[in-house]
Length: 223
Image 1 (cartoon, rainbow, N blue to C red):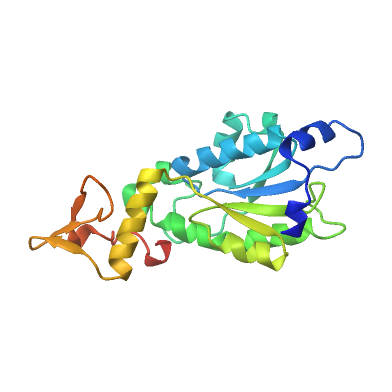
Image 2: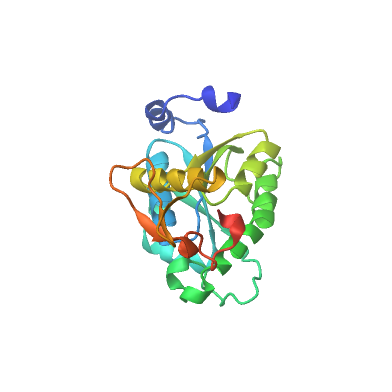
């Protein structure tokens, strides 16, 4: 964290980046492979790059062509293409939720979990003096999606900061918080035999059928 707080401001980085010999602070962005997550993460990466930071954007081979279509490299963002780990049942090259059949979407969580090891290998290379895939400077922080908790462990191992990037809006976060409070405090507000009130702290009540409160199609570790 000390390495982060000693950096010049984004505006200063933008000016210093034009000077000879200045090495840009290196930031790593780790998105979740779903368009609703990866596009906001990419927008953040572009914003950081435009303010004088060196940005590495982590992805997989199945998503590279789609990112290049979004002119990522023109924004001076380095694509870090991790080798795609084998996941039983996951169709080849289909590595984002928007291109998978509904019954296969849960496998994306297995894919993401298996990306931790190749990501750790790449990070190790960044901190080696003669790393084969060295960008310029070792990373100073990792910005990870809310669904990629293992990135925190990697950042801690290298004694750098990690920041959670939350793509959800205020309404969704308030609803999730309300549901979590109800679940962990066992305070479901039942309305009838099956109906459950989700939004205990919101002005307009939202209800669901209790059996549908936690989707069985998603792995429990995702929550």
